[in-house]
Length: 397
Ligand SMILES: *Cc1c(COP(=O)(O)O)cnc(C)c1O
Image 1 (cartoon, rainbow, N blue to C red):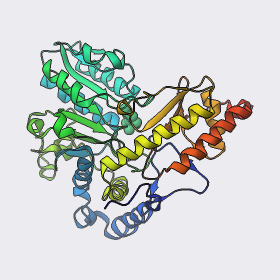
Image 2 (cartoon, helix red, strand yellow):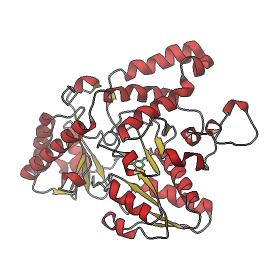
Image 3 (cartoon, helix red, strand yellow):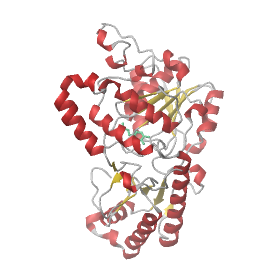
Image 4 (cartoon, rainbow, N blue to C red):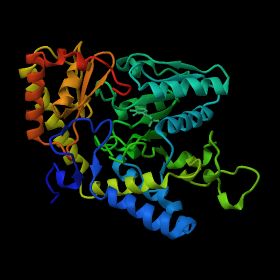
């Protein structure tokens, strides 16, 4: 028997907050503070450099990668961790393009997260061979997978609207056209059920500070399908991706495993916190989590539509086409969100007009949905959001 969701006891949540932003920054898992203190005091403070071996620091990226692998339906040893997601996008895309040297098209979609597109643009300039980036609307991507496409690079769940691509179908279409498939799982890992092994995509990347609760700046991950790993020529050939880092050889030789996608010194503090954060998934069945997520999202949509006629649903209505977030469009969404946050309901805003609410069944329950919808109704009906103090945009929205 799995314990029922939510499992609020596993997290340290501030009093008086309904947190609907775990899709942007997950909450603090209980035990993370103690783990960080242990790494700082006992391992760093006490063992100093000996901790690389003695406390297992050098192995931590692999150990944490294996925990993530289980959550994304990938086999042991197929996930490397470190750096940030933008870096992992670059590595995956470069490797994919090298696998299709005769093709020049990268296919993404217009809804993709800007950093993924920016990294592709930068890589194109670095390679300097005239690659092009095509970004049709998300609904038209599948039809746009033509035989000149080298790599299809998509974010599975759209950060703005929560729209979810059909991973199996698009991967099949990419392969049918001879293209390499890269999935960005930033808004999927820990949010929806994933079966990368079945989908057969060559690469997947993701971050761990959203639904995986690894904390701000937690390391990213990259998956490479086991049968292609030894053919990957790493763009970022750092020493820790070398076959024998401490042999200090003058020339790069990639590791004979997914470790070749490592670059430099791993962020040990962040990895240790992430390792602790990932223990909350130990007895969570992803099918249960998905069922709870769908129920929370449906409930929130129904409550908000009944209470807030000024808002219009910007997410797919069909749960099967939606990740674990619900977005509503409202012209004054920024101010309305600030007023909402001031009243203890934390979501976020994405330009131009999207109010975004993430649902994380590990620590959000039905009672939170009702309370959040009531407070949102009050903010809109009272016009509280018109207060000038809610109009000035902060650096992070
Ligand atoms: C959150 C997110 C990022 C952020 O990348 P970082 O390098 O971790 O800052 C990139 N891509 C997608 C799709 C995201 O959702």
